[in-house]
Length: 367
Image (cartoon, rainbow, N blue to C red):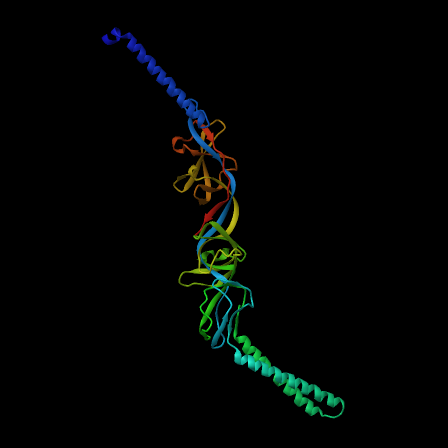
């Protein structure tokens, strides 16, 4: 007390500083309330709300699949002989019917020339006898003999042409070749691989899913595939077929989908992650943090017209991170408290800050 009476200026300065601090703190709190989107009156609790909104829920499965070529074959020779010429390089794209390898065919070429000469001679004899018959100088029996000789010669010619064709290895369909495993001078046999040929314009993607989803599967369902080799690329396709058997060990069924691979980015044997869309349905949803589980029931807080908190029981359905489907208890557009739930009770006076809903398609992962 003696200090106060002796130093009144110090006391006055202290009071002024405390008053200034109080005014500054009050101004800062009001600014915070304004920046939060709402002002709070005496006894009000500031909360955030968001309206219930409609969106589309997508039921989907995730799986791992393996890529296969639409058509694939390991090319070999039909006969044992020496390679005369190779007409392709590694990784080359070829059309159906292109000649890839030619085997030596000197003997068959000579036989072909001989057979062709025999056919020509038989044809001339047949025509000569036919003219003699018209002149009544030959019998029908002679004509039959010459016809049989001509047909025999023609059949022998066709056999030699077939043997010549066996010495040409052709592409059975259009596609991409693998590595070349032969060179000119190599002795090929039917067991010696020449190269591989894959038609990758369309990729067959095989993956398995649990048997309990079998009833929801049908050809034509959309899928999306992704590969670690192309992290920013999605490959879209459709379910083509479902295997007729379920694996008794894994209790899973194999599904085959077709992917368009016109850019030839995918290769047979690649590992792909698959998302299979089972169903799409509209749903009323709210933010997950608004739901309060109490025993086996679910509740939310809504705001009455008088600005009071009201606890309402709801029925919930499917969930995904961030949102919950509402089956009953709320209407579209009805606002629920999403932040500040733990600070309020039934009848609490609140000041709200409303945040806009962000409708978006929400996927439900059943994998």
